[in-house]
Amino acid sequence: MEFIEELKLGLYQTFILDNNYQYFLKGIGITLLVTVFALILGMILGVLVAIIRSAHDQQPEKKKGIVLRILNGICKVYLTVIRGTPMLVQLLIMWFVIWASARSTDANMIRCAILSFGINSGAYVAEIVRSGIMSIDKGQMEAGRSLGLNYAATMRFVIIPQAIKNILPALGNELITLLKETSVVTVIGLKDLTKGAMIIQSKTYQAFVPYIAIAVIYLVMVLFLSWVLGKLERRMRQSDLR
Amino acid sequence: MIYVKGLTKSFGDNLVISNVDMHIRPGEKVVIVGPSGSGKSTFLRCLNLLEQPTGGTITFDGQEITAPGVDVNLIRRHMGMVFQHFNLFANLTVKQNIMLAPVQLKIKTKEEAEAEAMRLLKLVNLEEKADDYPARLSGGQKQRIAIVRSLAMNPEVMLFDEPTSALDPEMVGEVLELMKRLADDGMTMVVVTHEMGFAREVGTRVVFMDEGVIKEENTPKEFFDHPQDPRLQDFLSKVL
Image 1 (cartoon, one colour):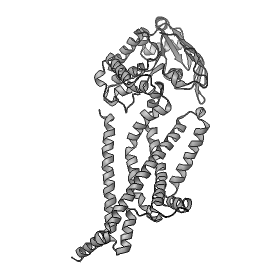
Image 2 (tube, chains in turn cyan, blue; image 1 turned 90 degrees about the horizontal axis):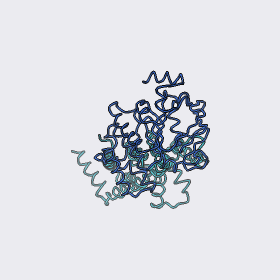
Image 3 (cartoon, one colour; image 1 turned 180 degrees about the horizontal axis):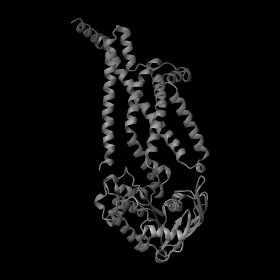
Image 4 (tube, one colour; image 1 turned 180 degrees about the vertical axis):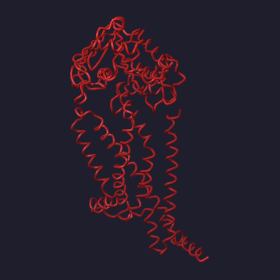
């Protein structure tokens, strides 16, 4: 009975007192905002890097231009550095070193977070997309080229669509990881969902309800994402139906 | 139409084709036979530069296509190629497979390409498959559509790289029949195959390749009835 009473108090203080539920709502907004834009940035970066890397690896030695070699070198350094250092450290460097002069406004922090997570996610997406491109039978590229289509057109209309379909589960995984990992933006002071729970804890000395609440909220968001991805995957599998 | 002079191709230290000359005239049906590893597929793939020759020249319609700075994409528009493993685009329907290149290269409008695709599909009795994906087709159907996909570009010459080798025996006939019809229509063809019956019946010239060189070439009748080269005699005694 005592537990029930405590839970009631916890719920009251966490959600109703001082309109505390606002912290969760705004937090969800910021978490989603950072995730969605970081995802877009990560996808663009990732696909670009993957195309450069696989174009480099697929061209015969003699035909590689100097530009392609340099771009490939840059991509390799990017992948090594980003995948070789912790996300948290990258975020701290981005905010306290690179953007040291920026004022601590929400807008600045959101931009910084999107950039950091986008750049980070791009490195993982790049390797996922590259594995997808490499998994496509080389006869598909040859067939495209033999019809007179150039490398870029064959990539765009034949290889990439098939690659995306094959890597959708891995990309979904990356998206889910990204969504959850945005919780580390609390270290630069951005009021995301996790920070909301921490603020409520410091105001009310309640820990159980706020942290369980955000755990459930993260879980629901992930479940929703998995559901959407599952639908997408089934739609893209259409061409495999016999 | 195609002049090949001193064509050489090596992969690293491995010399696959050495100093091959060949002249393919318009309307000819050249059939290349030989044991596996003889370089016949590589030779065919050099003709449309899917493999970059290590040495020698290839001239197509008066243009040296092995010269540096030549736009291979423009050359390939006029050379259709059919592969052993069909290589239909798995993410596109049959109709989209046929329409992709003509539309993207702005040779035809979407409507023209679609009409042409349906006409070609009717030709091979597969018009009801127009909106199916390749995964739903049999091997023979896939290969017939692959041939038709090349035809949609109105090529001057068609290259066939063992078009029936990956097919179930009962499906070989339908593909060979389509190739015969193409031949009868006057298409210039270069065919790498193990189908000796096809070589004898359709070929205007049969070429025997072994160890990267042309050991013998002749009219089908002479080639099969009076082979000169001992390696060819041995080869024919095994396959016929």
